[in-house]
Length: 225
Image (tube, rainbow, N blue to C red; front, side, top):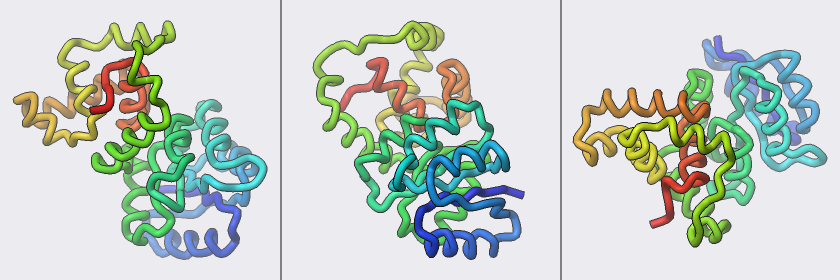
């Protein structure tokens, strides 16, 4: 059973999510929060598999709440909700440690599938949306494209731990390619690409593909086209 905490400052929105999720035989809503501070407290108390987190809330917003949850070492994974697919805060929520994000107007079945995917440890950002996020990031951070990045000691160690092939695969992931596309481009079996991605995530100590993309741009393995 996948357990979910719903976080949204709008009562009707929370009610709608609860009705949708409680209709699923394998999902249980264990609580609701109307703002970020309450979300952090309830996550620690209830330990849900997934926190369905609205970004825009008064006081402690969804980005800060996500950061606090991730930094606490919680096993709960955060799926953020946004009104626009390139919401100005979406990238920062991912950097804070969210497993991905969904639009509030997504089809109900898409949201349910997304929650199950996040609970299973996957990211729910598609390759095409990853590309658009990267475009938004590089547009708002142009200095990253004009000079070599300054790496933190931890990043240097993580980058040094990657083999040349793993660096190639990570750079390809950062372009938004799927495993199948990477396999075709590098002339590898798709199963081999999956193995490389798993090892990369472990070596750079990130939880999912989205965080790997952020790492690749931070350390200079990927640059805008």
